[in-house]
Image 1 (cartoon, rainbow, N blue to C red):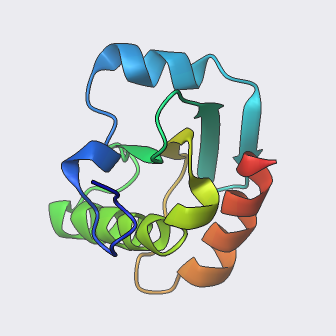
Image 2: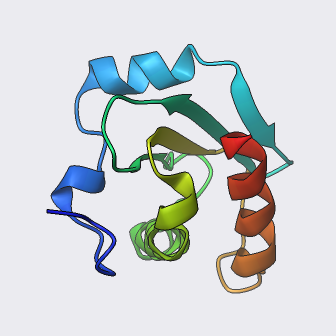
Image 3: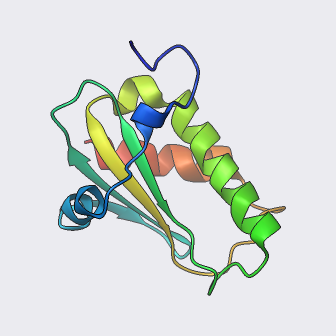
Length: 115
């Protein structure tokens, strides 16, 4: 079943440490002060996403979970162009979840890592 029906399914997640390790060894990257996006082609026809949002940078669980929802939603909306890629998003520094312009920030990174 295709995941392009508008939902973020379990098949769209990176789950095992080996999957994360493969993406971390990739050279396809896009970064700014707050985020690091890593990508690697996969053998599947679906894009998969992994998140690394450390407590060190975002203390509040509410804010961490909200940021993860924002990233997943951006990923869901861009699934068609990310097809066939494993992507890991790492939060590198403090991010004010209420003030980020998610659409513009993430659109730039999605375009850069799929090239």
